[in-house]
Image (cartoon, rainbow, N blue to C red; front, top):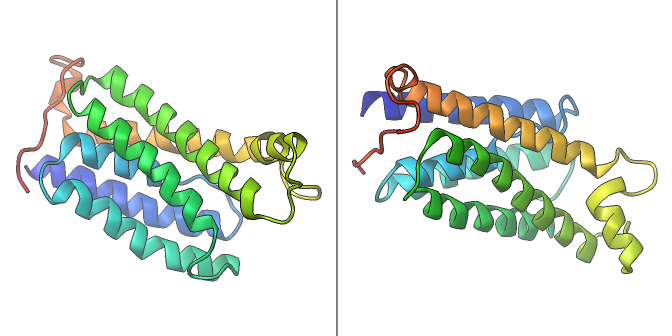
Amino acid sequence: MRSTWFASLLLVGLLIVFRVISAFGLLPNFSPLPAVFLCSLIFFRKKSAWLLPVVAWMVTDPLVSLIQGYPLIGFQHLGILAGLSGCVGLGLWLRRHPSRGAVLGGSLLAAAFFYVASNSVAFLFDPLYSKTFHGFVQAQWTGPEGYAPTWLFFRNLAAANFLFTAAFLSALSPAARFTNPATLPTATHS
């Protein structure tokens, strides 16, 4: 139980630090938000599976929005919710198959879900994208004219998810790295 909460606090603390760093333009989109949802849903049961990631998002999102000059509630939240919904589905599926390889691979898949969903919503609502096939590709890969390409955001999101999921797994079960690395413990408390 103690290692599970230590891993959780580590991940949430790192989430807050890296979301704020990202908001100031350093390491853009290097955020483990999908990893927090994924790992919580895989390894926690009852309320804690939902409580930890929702609180982490509710604490960091207004701060990031204010720093970046976005409204506290805007169209971008539809993309975030759609992306996190994909992470929820993946986390619930991986809960039945929690091997290290599956969880680490799932962290990359969660990043891809989140990226495609949030960029698709940006394509639909952001006036910087023309509502054509070219505009959709631009939203998914090159980004709007004068901005960094969106694939950089995917790279950073995938790297953050993978690294933070690996940190969570290491903090969760240090002994499992040396005994049976394919099997991970599951928290059964609330």
